[in-house]
Length: 218
Image 1 (cartoon, one colour):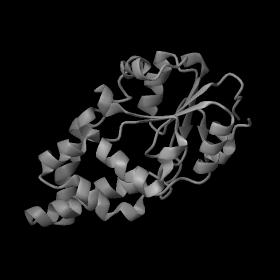
Image 2 (image 1 turned 180 degrees about the vertical axis):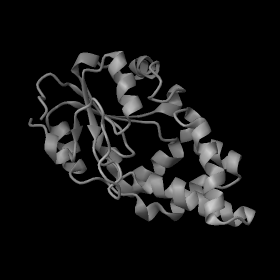
Image 3 (image 1 turned 45 degrees about the horizontal axis):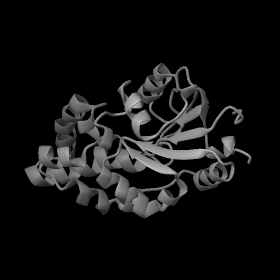
Image 4 (image 1 turned 90 degrees about the vertical axis):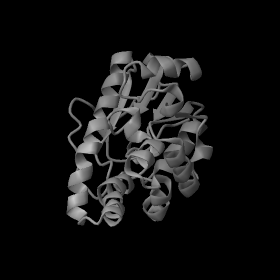
């Protein structure tokens, strides 16, 4: 389903793309409300209701992805809470095979994530995926999330790439649209970022059910 000939650079999202989004969904929708409820003497449901608008207020901004922001905002040690459920961090099937094949083909493989450094460190520790990339780019270092169209120009300053010869695989439709607006030519969404949930509507984008679908050849 993918012609690799015009592709030199591969940008890969982390959460929901390489890693199962179940960890993040469980963390924010179940685990954080549970700990917040304990702190404030609330029911689990009341805590979920209290947190939902606070999540929505910063969705798509750097604050949404920032461990330090939520630690201050909720007065909870978010990094420690992530470690409490770290056993749920899981790599999607065929990801390692895919990353190895990209390296073997001579193409440049770059992890481009909105995740905060503390989340990134935990997930790389749990999965050992970091050795499979030529570079790891954290949006917090650039000051903008990938949803922001100006992100890609900032990325050019630290990771030179030719948009017409770049593939981005990402589970976020706003991110894919911002990349498309910048001129990135090869875009793939993900049907099931969270393996516990049904396939998502990927709108106008082509999508994969697994990385086994698009293994490159050298």
